Image 1 (cartoon, rainbow, N blue to C red):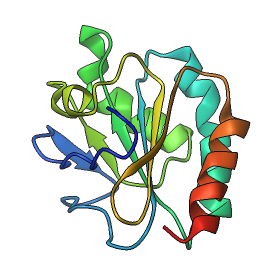
Image 2: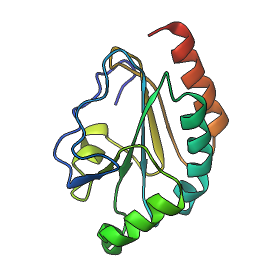
Image 3: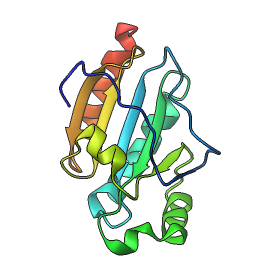
Image 4: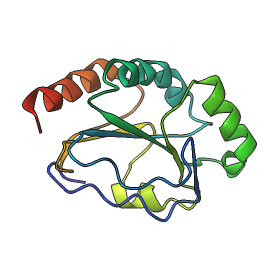
Length: 147
């Protein structure tokens, strides 16, 4: 995805956790979408920091987690639910078992982070397990810009 691209629809997933059926993100609110997997150690290490971001910006930022299986075993719903509970992931979690969202967002690997402004335009993308401080700064920049 290129910067300023429009956020793809969040459709075609296998199901949702922490949400009955997720609709599109709330209008006029920036959105952080992060892709992760239960078998990704970098993802698991980053989630506590993402939880801090979630808690710090809960009024101004919507966060959606997208679980992407890396291994065949990663589609085991009980394992995913256990990880979600243990990691205190309370935001909606899309189960992308067929990789529909991964393809739409063109994720190169997990973890991957996409920050969209309130108009649904991509303002920041980053991949890999490091750089959560940079992610936080980019979110703050989007929030400060009022977009």
